[in-house]
Length: 489
Image (cartoon, rainbow, N blue to C red):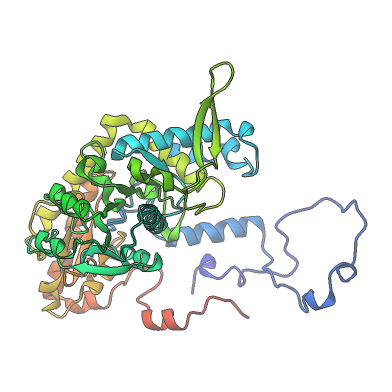
């Protein structure tokens, strides 16, 4: 027998049940056919479920308990920085004066919002060592694409038409996709034996045809590029732009500013680094910081500040930017996300942001050292906020990394990123973030060690996992090729 609220909401429906009471209609009723063409009218009732308010609440609360989320359990998703989100951020983002402000309001009626955006830009400039910032891009990949459009505009303004963008084989998958979308040719170079940029391989492709080198630092193995100054010199001597994918900025806050290392442009995943929930594809914000030479090409509008006749600051949207690539997002960007980021940064301050990164690094290092004896560690250099294990040892015993990931779900913990980066066979990419306690980390270690024992002694248990989740293992190929997302009686 299934539990009552395991049923679909349509199965809970009882004819005649109402979830609310509306006042009597005080205007004449108009036949739909008199104002809407008959061809556009429904031929049968929409079929909405008929349930009471308590049933609606219990149904959706039951669904929420089946879903894994950061408020429910640990989320060690490598390269995604799924940290806990302080509720004060949520409270401030939901203030009526932010939520109810219409995007077409004149600047004079949204001075508070514009001031917040302006000050957030100033804080991001300081954090990254950049000269200007745009908050428009809607996510990290959107920030990448926007950056590449700016790079193209920059080169054309300087009478150059380079055709190639270089990136290492450890790059995030969105990097080559963004490059191709921007009309550039993707050139991939292999990493060296340490998992970092191979300077000789980079030098071989640094020429007049180089538009940019895209680099994540620390990279997707969690390793800092120790030769970043030499990398910057090679790129700049060729007239190229050094771009930093900021997905891993959580390792650098208050410790290293990308602009001081030679980067010309960096994107921020404010929905990751500065603690906004971003599961399921949103909400996101991929702000961009740039050096002065790229600032004229920023998307428009940018938030400006001037003084009124009394000397008081007035904030406005500046559209007078003749070299701009144009808008890449409607209105002011994803303001709700940006309010959360502003709150997070103000709450921590400079020293607090440094502590964020130091704690994230300590947590990741602790897990790596606890697990490296039972799982392979292909790149053993000193990692920062994340690290990558390999399940090759377990695969030799007949258990794949995908099986291990499914088994982790049985313990109420989300699986790490698997099979990425591609240069690590059977990869398990783990990032604990700074918000996890030692008790939480120790629990994860116990889970991973137990699974390692199960692989050796009871591999079928791992291969059949998950066993304790609301839905057992799915046929992922069929789910992707033949999705059934509509309910029908």
